[in-house]
Amino acid sequence: MPKTKTINLLPQEEFDVSTLGRILKWAMGTFRIIVIVTEMIVMTAFLSRFWLDAQNSDLNDAIAIKTAQISAQSDFEKQFRILQHKLSIFKTLTDSPQASIAKLLNGMKNEKSLKTVDLGSLSTSENDAAFTVFSVNIGY
Image (cartoon, rainbow, N blue to C red; front, side, top):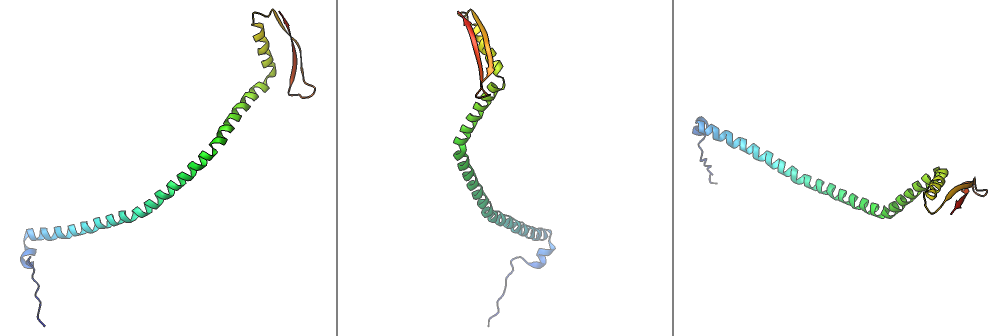
């Protein structure tokens, strides 16, 4: 069996002894470590990409579902807000019926075509206590 020879182009004896040789040996070892650390960072970033993509997809699905729910409820929300507005107007009117009657009489008194405006009678309805019955005497 023939013997194989290895050839080292950088002689060890002179390489370790010289300043340039020691600097080159240190630089090669340091850069090797830097390359390994960089490769580990790149592989970690590459592998974390799959996890981030899965999270992004889940969030997009959740947004699409919630958007559909909101758009499905929009008609109900509009009707609800209109009803709330009507109820608030009704509440202000029913809280002070005497004030509403007084405003009506005041408006009629300010009318120049009417000479006299007087409140004849004022009572609650016999059938429903929510209704107010009143009569107004107007003179032309």
